[in-house]
Length: 217
Length: 217
DNA sequence: TCCTTGCGGAGAGTAACACTATCCACTCGC
DNA sequence: GCGAGTGGATAGTGTTACTCTCCGCAAGGA
Image (cartoon, rainbow over all chains, first blue to last red; front, side, top):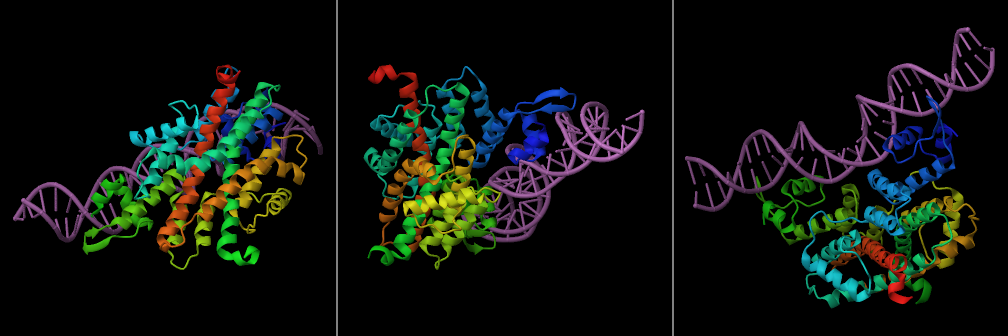
């Protein structure tokens, strides 16, 4: 398969594929001559993975490259792969978040029994979100209890999902397949949950605000 | 309150505030002279809302402006506000998604009893995600049942959350407060769920892959 | 053998985005 | 009265993700 055909099967423009090759996101094809190269299914797969990370996951190419580097490293553990994906998905606030909110978040995580590493990007992101929410709640008392009560329904929902996902990972599968599945499960599922929630919300709003009497009252 | 003080209380640089004023994201202060203006708490609040949408929600300023326009329109219904927020959160694929996936998604939504408008951005986004996932599953049979089975755990989790959120909205509150809360509840909660899921996932991976014997084996 | 078509690789160019810097006339407070 | 500060306008900057153009070479038909 040459570049043009790779482009046709994936729908990615040739110029973009060339750019991915230059940037090192996509490994080079096997050269058959000075200006001819062969690509195979692994390239198709990798190209689709890149597009999934960028188009659906909303990552920059730099973030995608970081993940792919870990994916390609045969010595990297699953934890490291997950860590790379999480690092790219998190929107860590620029400024150092205040210690109060961070301590509150840590307390919440401990009360949940979640083991999280201090450098976790998601932890910093959560602190930023909590801080922003608190700014809009004038009477917010900054107590650990108030936080835990507010987050509980979300944490409950997500706890089950995460546990099931990790538990259902296949054990008897080659590393590259498992790793790819972990990345997709982390990145695409996050977007999946988001769109499903919006669909459920939309439906709930339509039911309550537009025609509540039509259905059950 | 003058511009410099507005900058100090929100942490947003003066030049950025000026730019938001020019772009129409932030309403002008009340002019007291040709080159002096007064800002009040509403400006502080609006500025914080803009930063929440942009920094946490990851929106472009154009998307933020679209939402704010609906928020400011006293004739806009809650549904329209939610619709604007959803429109900015969704990552709709560029290409027209294929009819097969879209029909499958519609079938799934109907089986759930979710009422969704055909133009819903979340619907198109979901179709794009399902399509990408199917590409990585060679034996995927494109049956409605397989889709429903795969999405069920996520949809179950999200269904309860969305219903609770809509149900818990205050009814006896001025429109602007309600509208602001709806936008924040839509945008910030989406990010909140994402970061919480990653934290739960991180914990689950640490438990299973790093030290499973320490805890329960 | 020629000749057209297409290939790959490299570098420059581009469009959008979100600010940021500079300038200027003016005004407030001392 | 004067200097620091203000608001408004315009132009400039850095980043990102491509996209365009060019070039020498290869492949395959006439």
